[in-house]
Image 1 (cartoon, rainbow, N blue to C red):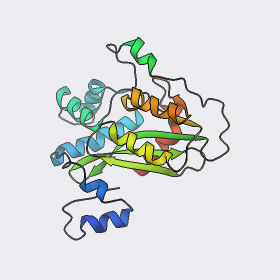
Image 2 (cartoon, one colour):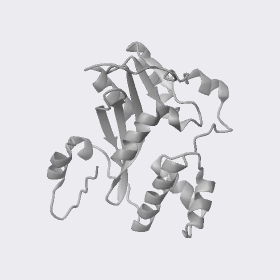
Image 3 (spheres, one colour):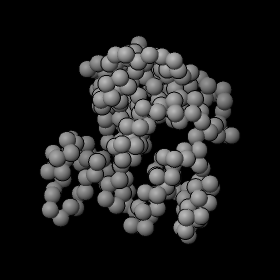
Image 4 (cartoon, one colour):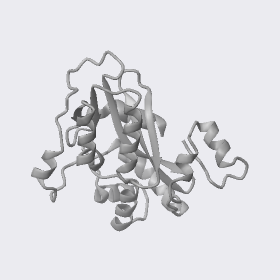
Length: 224
């Protein structure tokens, strides 16, 4: 899904119509981040590598890129991965275990037969390549029907765009279980209180277990 603001032949309105994107969600966000063409190409490659090796931090990613012929340093890779919202899937040593445990929940889907719509929704955040930059996509995905329940685009990673989309989706229907990773958008007080208020069980992928949310990850891979 790509919307180019300065496309030579198709304006934003027409692009939004063709892609079934609400163009107000594009206009209302701040101007998208701009990167050089070289950095965009590097980010494309980082994305491909990360999809295969989600446990790579910026140091391992840098070494991997160097082995493939890229002349790049750790500092640059770290900045690009931070910009893309990518981090290795392992517990950070400086994270308070007591605080983190308060807002994490066990994985509830192991061995569970998923046999009806709205039994389990998966949620995640990824980024979309937008011409010379990126925007973030929050997506709600039904594990049984494999249909997109709702989504929201943002030029930043503020948690408000996640909560806004969830509230909009809950006004139409609700899942029995919501599954996510242990990212900061899904382990904060506002998120937990919203799901508790709606009577929704919270399930979270185990740290270092990217396969726990495999259906949602496959959807994002297909989307990209």
